[in-house]
Length: 67
Image 1 (tube, rainbow, N blue to C red):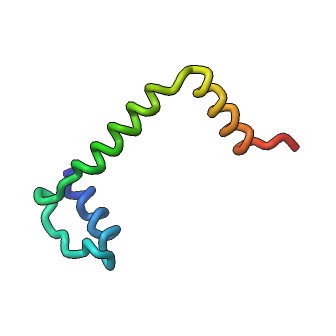
Image 2: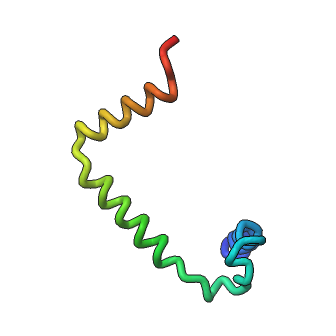
């Protein structure tokens, strides 16, 4: 049921684009997306704790500016 619902929404996103011909979920290859996400997670793991705290503080400053 999940795959059917996902694919119905996925086809709507692809509609009108260069991949509008996609009609069968089993033929879709998400390997590039998986490898991209794996590299992103490894990169995030390599960041030191201090860098993570600094990035978090910068993000909070942008989202919650002091009046």
